[in-house]
Length: 100
Image 1: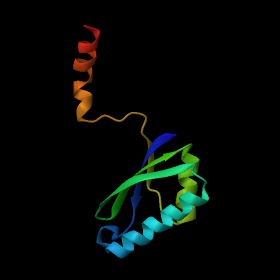
Image 2 (image 1 turned 30 degrees about the vertical axis):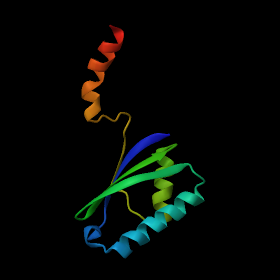
Image 3 (image 1 turned 180 degrees about the vertical axis):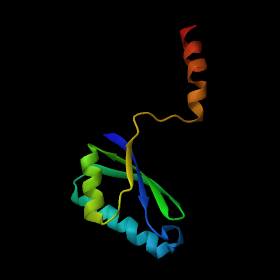
């Protein structure tokens, strides 16, 4: 599966209560179930009037279908082919140690 970053402009999403967040998560989960495992929601960041969601999917078209069925807007989708983290900074040192 490919990894995607989905940016959504949703007015006042940052002000939703726990119940409101639970409702949108349940909606997303329901649609993912309907799509038969071809889309996986990893997590979302909520900041003000935006959400930034990480999804795994077979295609961008399936991400768009999930959003259409769930009723969630998409502002922008970016495929993320590479992920790094703090451990990436140590990878060449570790690899060099293995070669010695």
